[in-house]
Length: 438
Image (cartoon, rainbow, N blue to C red):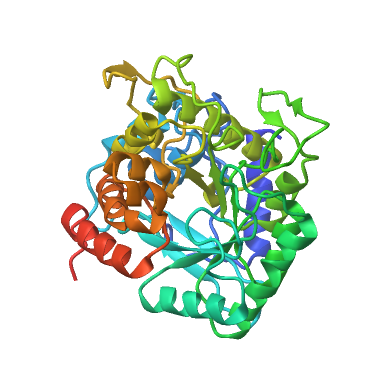
């Protein structure tokens, strides 16, 4: 549509929504404006009630316009000023009450209120609840109603903000699990938690659309996909795909797109984790000049791009670098040490920690992040003790050190097993690094 015709449509829409003339710039029910029309510069002249100037003249001075635009089109350049949206936002003076992005966990149950997080002021705790017999740390610990409800209630009491339930172990050597069995291990337990008064957000840790859908219907309101909507790759936990293909942006995809379609329809927060299949294989990132950081950025960026093209809401996406999945010990350490660079706009580090210019694509800046470093095997290797190498539950002090580093770099969510001690770690680290003092 031509700008003037579009403006007429927007004014009609405002009227339909109940907006009536008041004083200029006064309160209004709804306000619809045209900000940009690609690189076009347009001015209507004097048309009473229909004056239009594109780009909108007040864009450079309005944080409430620039901040969401910087999430959506950060590199777009203002056709008159020549500055990118990100540059215009950075040029604004500091605000006494800065805006925070929110993360909304909707509810499909009338008795369960939606939950909204304000991001940026603290790190949230995700409690890990595996209902499997063979998960690397808590396998077999939570396989009946009482133990599952007990863990969940204790996690909430200790300060967990979200519970992640998984019914399929992705550790090396884990057993194949049918869709029906994975669904049996997740959806009924989620429904039971909701019926028992657990009202914090619940995410389902699965790469299968059928399991995710059943879990959402049971009361979950977040999807945590370790394969970032690309399905299980060949050789993953006993799964062998006969229709592995590559889509138009180079992402290896081995499912029928069902999970991607569900993510578009469900409109719930979606955790996209970086992985390359089997956790203990495919660890070479030497083809990337920036080593592991650049490799994760680019490969995870491809999956984000695929999700956005399909219609997944940008504001629902959470990024997870996939600690312990197809990374060597040194690369896991680098990912924790330089976590903040994954969503940086300025630099990236190579394997020798030298600065390199950051390519403008894929731009992962401003996406919220989640990291699951709890009790991972690389921590046992660093501790170099037989008990820590053999028993994941002996790695909680090591987990605390890694979590502290992540909080210092502004991680939004940390996925942990031992909620009570890690809540102490996060609370103190937030107070030190984010000045989140009570």
